[in-house]
Length: 158
Image 1 (cartoon, one colour):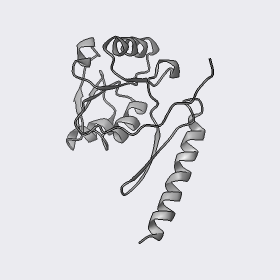
Image 2 (image 1 turned 135 degrees about the vertical axis):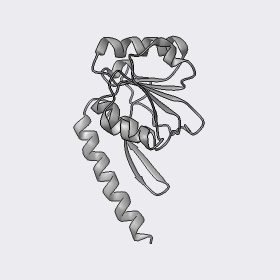
Image 3 (image 1 turned 45 degrees about the horizontal axis):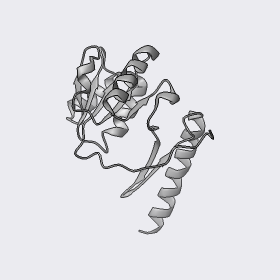
Image 4 (image 1 turned 90 degrees about the vertical axis):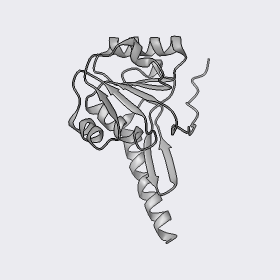
C-alpha cells in the first residue's frame, strides 16, 4: 500500500476534553499550543514542567501530579502521549485505540491517529504545518516561514 500523507483537518475542540499524558519539555510545548484551541486540557504526569505549571496557575489547563492510570482516559476525546517512556506511550495509544479515542504518540509516528502540527496563527488565520512526522526540524523551519508570511500579508491589510 502507498504511504499516503496525513490529511489536514481543523477540528473544533472548544467543547471537548483533551488529555496529555506526560509533563516534560515536549508535553509543555504541545500543551501550550493545545490550550489555545481547547479550554479543557488535563495533564497527567508524576512531575510537571514549569511551563505547564504556569499555564495551570493561570487556569488554562488542569494538572494531575501522579502516574497515568487507564481511567484517566474516561471522557477524553483527544489524547497526546508525550512521556519519555516509549512503552508507556504505546500502552496509552493501545488503550485509546480500544476506546476509539484519537491519539498522538510523540515517540512513534506509526501509533498516531493524527499528527501534532506546527501552528502559525495571526488573528483569525490558523495554519498547521507538518513534515509527515518524519522531519521535525524541517517542520519547525516551515512553520516559522509561514508565520513570517502571515505577518507580512496580514499586516499589509491594515
